[in-house]
Image (cartoon, rainbow over the protein chains, first blue to last red):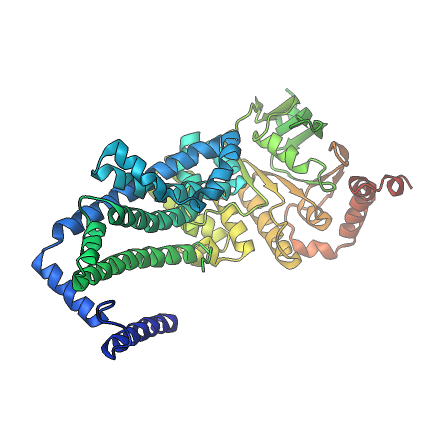
Length: 252
Length: 273
């Protein structure tokens, strides 16, 4: 492991140890936060019991569907908008301000339209994630060097071959940034929607545990979400960095 | 057909390029009319002030742009808005593909043409050896210097065995010493392939060192002011820069271009003196 990796591990371990000590020494009320070691034990017990397997599968299933729709739909929309400069100029202000609007205000409207089903949650996940992918696609296509278009013509490549063999690979690092953001936003959109109002799912179970003062269950599931979301993002980050390094982009 | 006409490999006749005005801006007359006949196997350089239409000339000749007026031919066939088979172009910008290794970059065009795998391997290995990139076959462009990346682009063109090679200021971004050495490599490539080469450059010394003939262009709209024959032997390299004739040629080129360069910079009065 690199020195930076060790420093990162030490920082995390120190933060967890500090929280553990604060809880054990009574600096933090046990009814508010339980020690991390108890959170981990509760998570292990919960996973072994299989008590919430259905909820876990449901939530992560919805997240995967929301990511797939956001990435595919965001990429397709980005390509179409990029090909229509006037439409893009008209939409640019909306993209720039999109994340300034609390899109969860539309969640009740979706519940009215689709009922308390999976659909409003998927749509909220997509709504939070898709614009990041659209913006990344536009950014990526903007950065395809113009000379590649000339190279394509020298090689007598058609529009489809140029798009697939040259433009897509050239834009790929920027598209991948969109994928990373879409994954993070989809997690947030889905869990938050379940937490606000849903018949099932991890967000709903955490909300119920919170209402019932069932701290071990609440923190166990929160820990699970933190671990999964962090692990997925770390894997994507490492892959992205190695890829960018090889291509000389040098992402920080 | 006369012997001279049969020897003409590519030509421009009255070629003109006018870019239409966009959003109320006036049209830009970038090139011509220009007449030029490239003889088979010659090395022709075009020099001229910035913005005089040198690259436009190359793109019109390559078939990357349609001339507004006039005709363009390659091997007796009219070029009509498409790059014909047999023409290879190396651009000033880094056009290597960062997602492919040097080997795969070089093989790109051959794979698209459906050439057999064994033949691709042979041609790519030969091209990489010729361009001194054999040890970097598995490297990615990001791991190479600017000069080496440009050599990758030349290799990618070379493996397709073009009969007319168009070089659009390929060494413009390189330092003076690397440019001289790259010039030697281009001369070696030219001799080995027997291809006709048209080089666009703003460097007078580069044009004087590499070319059989040099066309000096006026400020926009670009037209040929003079075409100078250098008289260099086919077997030559960068050592000719120390010959007296080299100084005479560059002096003559500068004499032709000084006024045009001043015009292109907006100093019309100085240019008239």
